[in-house]
Amino acid sequence: MAFTSIATTPGWSDNAVQKAYDLIFNWELKASAVCEPLVDVTPKQQAHSGSSVTLQLNNYFGEADIETATTPLSEEVDVTPTKLPGTRKVELTPAEYGLATVRTLKLKNRGLVDVDPVIAAAVAEHCKDTIDRLVQKKMRTSTNVTYAGTATSVATTGNTSLAKATNIRKMVTKLRAASVAGRDGQFYVGVFHPDVIHDLREESGSGGWRVPNEYGQSQSKIFNGEFGEFEGVRFISTPTVQFAADKTAGASSQPVYRGFILGREALAKAVVTAPQTVVSPQVDSLRRNAGIGWYADLDYGIYRSEALRVLVSGSSVNA
Image (cartoon, rainbow, N blue to C red; front, side):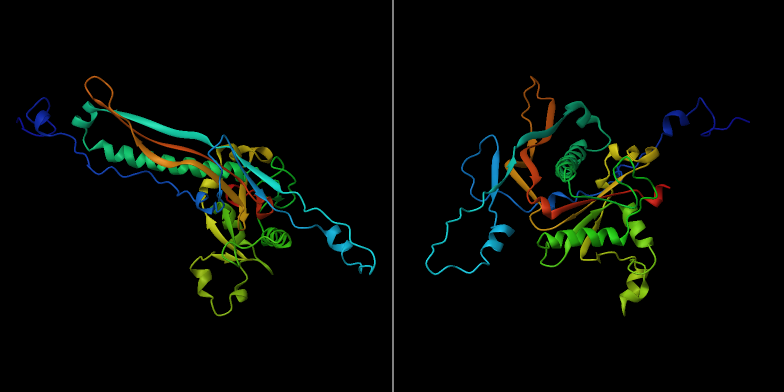
């Protein structure tokens, strides 16, 4: 018996039955950028654009000057004038950054979905991620580094060099000892990888995050997985702080994690042109090629070195 069916080939179904496609193209998962919003210093009275921008900080009189002034004045002897302490400079050198894409008219006319909104969304996300990466690259240059566990360098950091509450307390103590102001008047902000926050939450014993009686009447916070405020720090969890170079940089090629705790005015930026979308003019003879991209001219840097501290650790998640 001859059937007219999908299984029968060749036949009528070859042309009548085709693959179906969902016209909604969902995006891959990705983490949001978090570090650029933490930059809180910009030039206030810039003379002109220039090739670079120098920000200056006034220094107060030092300990020696104060100690000298504790000696009573002599009635008949004038004081020796003392010059003001020199200023401290922070230089930012803006550079151009950007990305461009070009799509053809043929793709637009024959595509399963409208490709222009997809390009615009992808370009916008690329801009945001690149700017955040520029900020993080400057943050990573801080020399105020604390190593977790017995590690003494990135190369000696392994998956047993776990972040502990004592590391957070030490970093906060250093910030407070340096008179660093909190970002909201009280709390500093911490930016850490989820793997590192996992180890902090897993720590048991006195002084650790997991001691229930330290929550008093708010026992439900443990069950809700809250990690918002701890040891004077408001924590932000993001995987974007781990660069590809860190994933095999530790002992025995183990992953290394860098977390940051910031106070007020830790970071500065100088902006010639803020990040913006650029739609390219169609200059080909038949106007078939359309370009869209982003452009920025700026620089970031550490403004108050005392206000930024780095924690280098491994994680049990990758043990």
